[in-house]
Length: 303
Image (cartoon, rainbow, N blue to C red; front, side, top):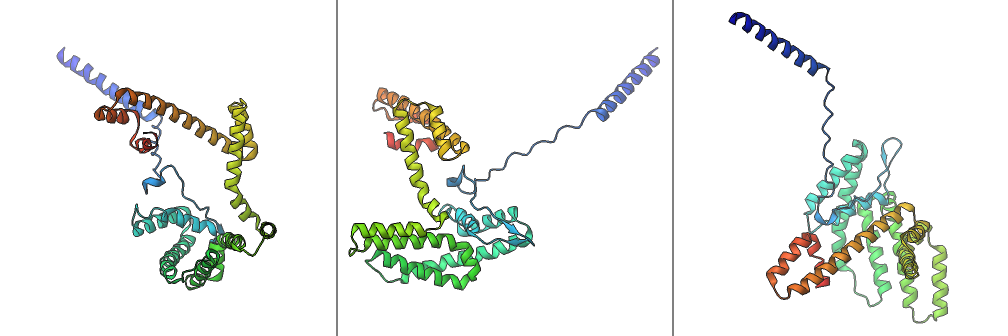
């Protein structure tokens, strides 16, 4: 009987094993584990929450388009100087180029990056040799001329036009306005005429860039006026959406909510701070329990 029971038990185990194996074979494969989204902005702390500038494009035949967008990408990472050494910044830019571009245009972009860095470093020395001038427009004009002459050492005319053409147009306009406003021989009426003539000649892209901050400021003045009249969030959203885009209006609404929540927290913090009096340890515990480390850096404005 023992032998029979062992045989039956063994058979049960075998059948169970076969059933388990069959279930494993028939079961759908486990879904792949999703990779965590990489932290794209941990390169330097000050860039957290931002995306790299520069919309790089490639023409037919894998030809890199050399334009201001390429320079914007370089400058985005170069803004991290002081938080990271130049060698680390260059390596990160090259990594970004490899990620965005095919090998051939990436090589060309890296060559231009080397020229761009060399140009920026040489520019420091050139600026130190410029003569001093009390005439701001004259000094700015001399600096622009020196910059453009120096570029010829590092870039072809086509590369210079692509990388710096837009900023040159903006700088030329700014220097011309500076010269008009600094010319004491001109009456106010004549100054207005000459400034209006500059406005008429200004490229549309440069004019839009110049006017963008004013447009935002005027919009927010209108928003404040609306709110003073009792308008709600929907009216404010419609005004912003008509001025910019619905997406921009939604982002601004999010910022409004975040700011409102922050102000409410500050009111509670200040009330509790008043209650605690001069107890330094208790005040520090209050800060640590109420705010993150980054938020605590903002508290100085409310102390």
